[in-house]
Every structure is written in C-alpha cells, then in structure tokens.
Amino acid sequence: MRAFIDTFHDCALDMSARLQRTLLLVIAVALGAGTFVMSLGSNVTASHQITNDMAAGTLDHISVSVSGGTETRTFPDNADTRALTLPMVESSARRLDISIDRVQPNRFTTANLDDYITDVTVTGVTSGYFDVMDITGGTQGHWVLDATEHTNVAYLGTTAAQQLGIPTDTPYPTGYQISLAGRRVDVIGIVHSSPRARIDHLIIVPYAYALAVEPTDSQAVLTVRTAIGAGGPVSTALRQVVRPDAPERLSVTQVATLDSLRSGVDSQLSRLGMSVGVTLLVLTTLLIANSMIVSVMSRTSEIGLRRALGSSHADIARLFLTEGAITGVLGGLAGAAVGVVGTVVTALVNGWSVSMPWWLPLIGLAIGAVVGVLASVYPALSAAKVNPATAIRAD
Image (cartoon, rainbow, N blue to C red):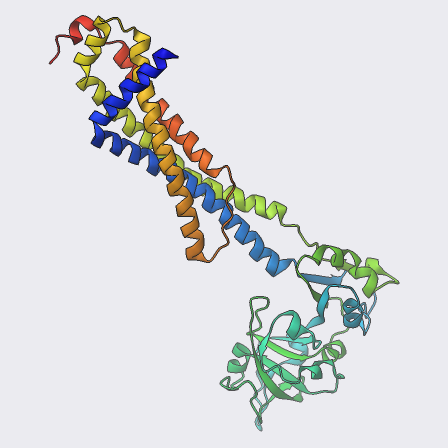
C-alpha cells in the first residue's frame, strides 16, 4: 500500500509540474468520454420520445376490416354505434372507397365535359370520420354524411377541389356542383388533411351513397379512436361487439405494444451515436499514448536516476500507469458532467422530456479510467525497458 501511495504522490507532483500538458490530456479524455455519454443519453431520451410520439399516433387508432366471406354487407348499419359502447372508445367511423369508373367525377356545368377526373378518390364515410381523423375545414353539419343514399352532398379535399375548378379560399363554397355518375352533387365544404389522414385528393360523400354504388362492403374499414393506452383491450373485444353473431368475419389490426419497434429504434440510434463516441475514444487514446511516449523520452534521465536508486521495472511501469489512470479518471469525471449537460441541452432544444438512467455518469467515469490506463500501457512498458546506465547520461 505504501508503494502505491508513494507512486500516487510522485505522479501528482509530476502532473502539477506539467500542468498545461495535464490539462490538455484531461480535456481530451473529457471530450471523448463526454461525447460517448452524451450519445448514450441522447439515444435513450430520443428513443423514449419517439416511443411516446408513436404511442400517441398509433395506440389510439384501431382499424377493422372484412375478413373473407361472401356476404354483401358485412358491417351492420349500426356498427359505429356498437363500437362506441366499448369503454374508452372516443369516436368511430366507417369508410368505403368507390371505384372511380362507377362514378366518373367531374365538374358539373351546363356543358359538362366528357372526360372525368381520374386522379382523385371518391369515398363514402360516416360522420364520425372527421373526429377519428382530426379532419379540419368545412366540417359544419357533417352529420349529413349519415344521411340516405339519395343525399347529394360532398366535401372536397383541397387538391380535388383545385382539379375540379372549385375555389379553396373558403371552407364553405356556395353554388358549386360536381357530377358523380351523372348526378348533381352539391359541394358543401373544403376539408384539410391532418397527421392522421391525407385527404387532399378525396371527394367525400355519405357512406350510404357508397354502399348503394358498390356491390359489397368488403373493402370497407371501420376505424375507432380510443383513449391513450386502451388500444390493446379495445382491439381484443371490438370484433365481438360489432359482429357478435360472426366475429370471425372481421379482422382487427393488431395494436403493437411498440416494444419491438422501440428496440429497433434503440438499436439504430445506439449504433449511430456509439460509432461517433467510439471513434473519438480511439483518437483520444492515441493522443494520450503519443503524449506519454513523448513524456517518457523527455524524462529519460529521471527514469535512469530512479533505476539507479533501486526502482524496479515494475516501479517505473506503475508510475506511468498511475499517471494515465489519474488523467483518465479526471477526464472521465469532466466527461460525465459534459455528457449529462449535453444530453439535457439537446433534450431542451428539441422539446423532449429528459430521460436519463442513473448509471450514465458512472459510464463516463469508467470509460475515462479505462482509456487512461490503456493509453499508458505501451509508454509504461517502454519506460520500464530503459537502460539505467544509458539513461542517466542522457541530456
């Protein structure tokens, strides 16, 4: 123990005598360890944030589609209402796209064009679709979408409206009609996309109209929106509630727990961040090793004197290993602080919630110590091999 205390004391004196060199080495270790800690902390914070965002956008959104069979109508007329009877279900709606060839949409004018617009989608929805998908715009009186097949009204997405020559500067254009399968349909609103649904190219009509045009509802989709976290239980019970007589006729999208997705996010972010951190650590190790080799060369006379006074090969090697360890620990402490602060700043700048494991600063300290010791192994071995007779005569 006494030998280690003496070695530590000698290293402290030598490092204080070469203060600028010591500070530069500590800063180098701090940058390497700090970058590594910051990459890990930012990865954990980012993955948690991504998971939360994905949960907010997907775990409250469940779709039910038709699963095989020969029935003309699979969804009952009150399917939306049945879904709403489940606890934690906030809104429900059905959607059925109509074959463009069946309705041939066009702008209705006194001299109607023969060619119909093909790069739009005509779809029938129930009134709850606006709530489920957070659709904004001309949603006034969207209860009309629950009317009969003879209700001739339509909402237009912005792109569809532009292609039909209908202005989009007002949510409720008046006096405009379009032609669907030769029928005059009044345009009652311009609607806008949301993060949940892109509807720019949609012509939205009552769901009953779509049922009247399409021979079957096999392509219809029932979508429900639940409270956050209720997706799993709701998806389990949804088929039985909508079709208690034949739940096998329906297929419910599986609501992932996002564990696998989060694992993938963690893995990819960790690889990206750690590759940068490891690169800096390697460069830091080489920098410290080079600096200590220069130190060995400049201290040849001192090493020779120590050997002449009875220091063994192990004593000389221990001197440089201890110096490297001290440099690494000091750099690791500073690096841990830099990494933690960097993680917090990154989270605040991006508006994330900080999520940092308690052991993260300890990793910075451990990395600094390991880097310092590894970088000093070769210089220590080189110093131990110095011939005392030759060294003591060196300038």
